[in-house]
Length: 328
Image (tube, rainbow, N blue to C red):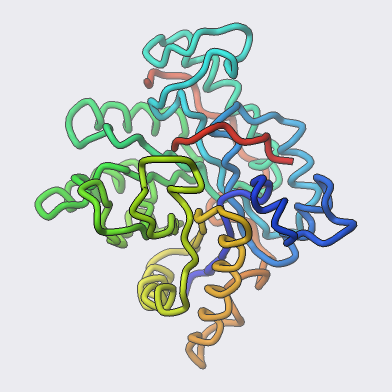
């Protein structure tokens, strides 16, 4: 049975910081991360989608978290074909995702920015969350191949936002494509009442990792403010639906990351705490010690060597809401 880690998509979201979840005395950058890491085993860095990650921040994150704690780092928007503001580009570069020279520099900066996490064995995955217009086809396959060439040796997770990737008749080809590149498929929980809804399928495409991201079940998904899109409080019955699915994923992979993205106030951390408790209560009698939240964390993320080899070499390559503050 693989290890199951539960956490949230960001620990510095403004609504969470303002909710009172962080106690007095632990509301500075270091205190917040230490408080969070005492309760969960994984967190997603979403600030790296809005701006390239910096080596200093990554080094501090590794120093401030216990052994075994891992970070899932969201790929910078330009690297997934999302609109990107020139203001967040390095060295005055234009945000031209089709320009190979620009991509080379951005990839180099992104690689350097997460290197301290890789060196410390704290890189759980790099999440490539593709936009809703990214559909199956030859162009998408070329894009994914180029991403794989640039990220050789990294633990990669891929979330598709267009439902056609997982429709009957296409899902098998999607699994084969991701498996060929060693990329873990991301399962999602979201409302199923929209034409754009991604079905809650749980394919396994990498023996190292599976990822489940809970976006909430608000029908305002894709419209309105961030609060409109993600406002949802998960009930125990909704989370319990996923217990057998998560267990099945853990039977087939070394590690499962269960992440909550319903980031309004403390809704995400509350859901994560509840899911951790439900997983422990549902744990088979002959299973290993409790698998969720802060237990156990003695080993680094699977497949991530403590001292990695050279980073990926540049090749070619071409989610979204208002920018958030850089993670601290």
